[in-house]
Image (cartoon, rainbow, N blue to C red; front, side):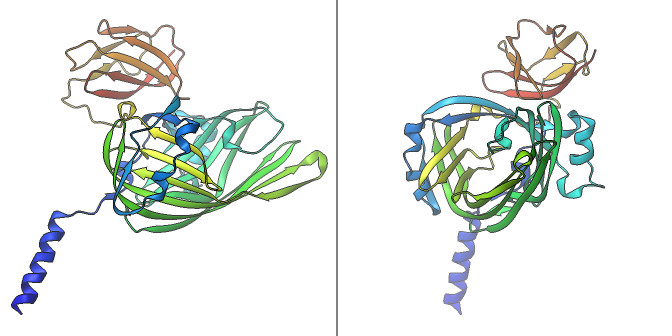
Length: 356
């Protein structure tokens, strides 16, 4: 009995000093988040050592990261979009399955099919809740005509709460009809596994992470009205990898592999991550809000700060040093913006409404 008691006590002690990493929706993107991403160079994606490593206490070293482009993603509140979008993606009574918490502006890649049409004003919609992170649909303009696509099957990209060893299966399905042209759609099945837990090192620091490996089986369907027919095409198996840390609001590193080739990779820049923060008693303030002509800015920074303004498509529309506490916005169009104020050690973000 004494030996059993001592062994149990020792195991219990180990349990108190080791805490398994758990990630939930509070660690993930929300409306108002602004993220800066870098895209990997082709030379860097040729190295697949990161993919081969899995299991517990894993070490992933991406300090040799080489990027070629950088872009900013702004996670837009659904309430800031058109009334049509409110009906389909902000109506928990009529459409609970596609109820969304935020959107991001995207290009023609949301269609991802070869169609001879002009595609613009694209948005992808997502929901972040206690059960997971979901892709709920998309909207765009085709030849200037607005189209809204609610996913018939809503794909769960990440399951919450998430911990090492978890598995999940989800499906995606949508079909969009384009007047006088035809239709396109997609069916996909995702098999996910949290196959690694450990430390990821990047040029921006080291992070405790979970690694998610997802196999995606995708079928594209195209119907062309003038031809009176169409076809469905099965894509090669795509495997997506994501390294996720509770310290950040999105995957730090994402890689996609098709037929043993890395087709894409992107990394989150730590200095470009801006979350939703409470600013009470922080010394930070922007007023008035809504505003017409001028805003007054108060910051806790002893040095002069940098102010950047983004529209709801994620485009930077203003960037300047904060030379005084008052900034003119007379040249800005009315609408909803995100204003980011950066010092040496801190960054703040706030939604700003400019009126006529």
